[in-house]
Each structure stands twice: as structure tokens, then as C-alpha cells.
Length: 396
Image (spheres, rainbow, N blue to C red):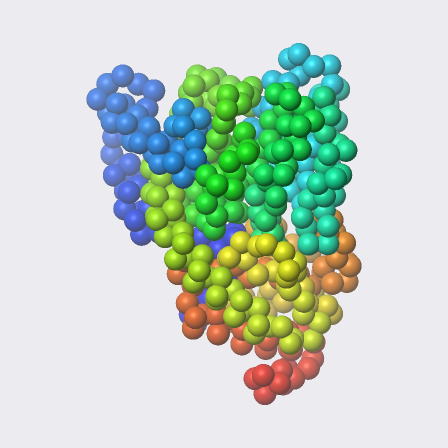
């Protein structure tokens, strides 16, 4: 059985050029980049060249790029590190985040509120498409706000957020006193980050959504943004993140970012057409509805809900047919827990229980989209106990 991979938003397939770039750093002597001998200098040169690539990818200076072990650490370092720095000279610190943030942001904010006196979390609601309520944001930001975090694009639905307006509101309310963070992990394969994140001070990235290695990420600190290190010790990354950098991982990260940027325009155009074809192929399924269909979304994500079908059962049947997909967040694929994103959007629980995310990538083909349409239709029909008129098949 051939594998149909429609879970790129969880992790993109490793690019051949990434594996090739990493290979010299996966065996034999790999020096510590902090050392002084020849092997260390070679490693340090590879790390710094990778830092330059990531800086160009996001639109920053190389000195503003801090390597991390992934997107979750990057988001945690941004939120907790910003609040820790803010608390040095403020009795009260508020964190303002959107209701549809990834748990990497939400849980970091909740941790800070739970463990530090004087820290308060404020959550901004969203509209029925999952777009942040700018008027509500304006009401929640004040002179005690340490950081505002609004993601570039949602990891479940693909919906884009108005970051320029978010940045303008934050700076109008607190002149020079807070940082704006964005989780750009889900957006990175599909948007020009130097353009769409230009107003953000802190930007979180990871490699494996770009076809790079798992365990590599970055936090970009623009315009003099300063954080206290969440992982201190050793003085690496200019004292902003302790621990020896994995040379192979950051080299692979840079290779993935370079290739992703080079192919961006062609990939977005082609995958958008495939995503729209996939949506049309499922549109007439009984109870099926495209999530946030009228909102601006990244090219690679199609999120639907199918009323009367349970996500975990549907994913099981899809998997048995060779189709890899997820119910929503990549870190909880197949889980029966209701999506906080859909709840924030006001999606009824009975509909949210039938959530399905199909995410495409650079190598997704038209034939694969056609096969996915057929399998999803047959699987839904089987679970609903009805015939699929498009295939003429009756579920057992």
C-alpha cells in the first residue's frame, strides 16, 4: 500500500538536500563550537554560516538569531524570558495572548502566571474565523504588559493573523515598554517572513516544518529585544541560551530554510490550487464544512469538520486506507480532547468532534489529492453508514 502523506503541518518530509548538508556533521569528530582548536573553529564556522541563512530567512541580523531545540522551546523562551526581564523593574507584569495560540505559548504563559507573583495572563478572543479581535486586544494591553503574543498563522486551521495591526496597537498603548512575539512555525513554509513578521520583536521558528531536522529551532530577537535566558549556563548564544549547539541540526535547519525560500512563490501557487481542489472534492460530503473558508489562510492547510463523525474513528479508517492526516494540532493528532482553537471560534462541540486537518507540502501531487478525496469520501460514508454517490460504493 502506498502512503499518502497529508500531515505536513505536523512534520514535513526530510528534504534530500537537508540530509546531504547534515551528513558531514553526523559522524567522526564534530568540535564544540565554543572551543578554540581547529575542529571547534570548523564547527563554529558552520553554526555562524547557518545563523546568517536563518537571519535572512526571517529578515533579521545574524546577531539577533538564537538557536533552540525547536519551536516549543523558542516560544517558551520568548514568553517566560520576556516576562522574567520585565519583572526586574515592574511590580506587575501582564501577558496578552490570543485564544487560538499553540500550547507552546499558552502553557508558557500559564506557567509564568502560576509561578510568579504579580504576573497575569490575559486572553484575547477571536471571531468565527479565528482572527484575533483587535478591539479586544486594545482593551487588554496596558502599561503593565510585558509581552503580546499572536501567531502568524494557526497550526490547526491555517488562518493568518493581522500582525501589522497587532504591532501597531501594542506600540500605541505602551511606548517602548513591551515586546510583540509571534509563533511563525506554521507560517514559515508558506509566507515571506521578512514581510509578514516585520512588526514583531520576537519570532519563533522550527526546522522540521520546513523539511529540516526535528530538534532544531530559533528565536529571533529584533530591535534590541532582550530576554532573560530560560536555560542559563555556559554562556552560549551570547548568554541568551545555554547549552552546546547541535551543529548538524542547525546546518540542516539552514539548508531547509534556504530551499524553502528559493521555492516559495512556485510552491504557494501550486499547493494553493491543490488545496482548493481538495476542498471542492469534499464540499458535497454530508455534514462537511470547510473551516474559516472565507479567511486568509496559508496554502498548505485544509481544515474541515464533519458533523456526525468522530475524529479518532475517522483517522483510524483513513490510516488503514494509507492516508496520513490529523485531527488538528500536530502534537495531539488522534486525541479525543476538544480543540481549544475551534472552541474559541465558537464551533459547536458536536461539529468540532469531527475535525480533520489535511495538510499538503512541496511534493504533494495532483494524483495524491485525487486519491485523498476518494479515501476521505469512502471513509466518511463508511462511518456514517451511507453510500458515497461519487464513488458508487456502499459502506459495509
